[in-house]
Image (tube, rainbow, N blue to C red):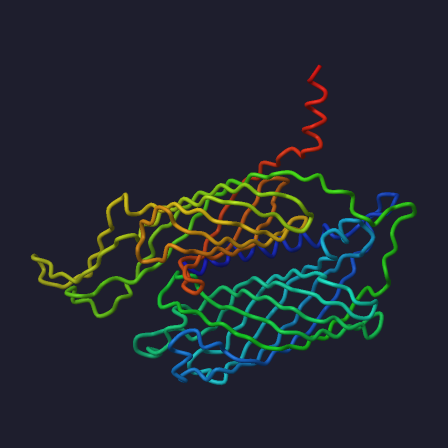
Length: 416
């Protein structure tokens, strides 16, 4: 059941990547869509597993790994002002395979992911600084097992989310071939869908060879400006409903339970409202309020003998209703593109129902616009910058505010 919960957001993300790829194909002055530049790439990484938990620090999982990835995608053609306003974005999907030097401990995972990247700074026609973000699902891990793999407290499931961020230099070798060299951070976690879940964090330099299937430069339509029009600054309002599940550890003192981890998923629902200032094509930011109902708050568990059949059963009792609610205030920042955006929140719980978590929390995720104002998101909420609370999916609606310029014109019309 938990694996299905992962696969649905991934399918939606890949579908959104295809829609975004379609968006970056421009049209000429006759309205005919120009060919979208396609590319393929092969990526090779070799680096270390960052010692962020006791399992890695103990040396039982040797802290080194290697990986390869193949990717296919499309680039902005450069024939529209939107391409330049959003940093010449590119999109696509890829397959990733990693090999850990202690495969008995972690396995040899594979991953399907969507990626989005773009330009940070252009130094010349031959050289530029680029970034890339990855989001997907990974499979074939060797997770924690009380009998077969009891030391692996990093991952409690064989299916885990895959989140990555790369920064690299892009060197033009010819019209068709490009060489990329940079560094990347990669995180794998199941978002507390199944405990234990300390997570795996990787750091590595990489090299990548990219082949442009459509190498010919795209020229703008006659008389068409590539300079983005001035942005009319405005304030947007986002309303979002979130649904998820999570597992938690319980106090075992005097309970006769053999482990703090109980195999039960508790429901989580959330409602958020954000006021976002739109001052650029590339980003939005502003305050956000998060209201959360967490069924795991104050949960108790123990082992008890049944008075009739004499057998022992594990019992779970939920905490009081008022303890299941939390309310937090956060600052949200978002990198925006035409259909896809990436966001992060840093917040603090003013009403703190679940004392299992810290008051300070973080949220990262990806947003996909399904319609002009209706969106879906997939992300992870964590506390203490390292402890995952839960993965989540959500749906929401954006109320686009009127620009100051248009509002002023409207006022001038109605005033005598």
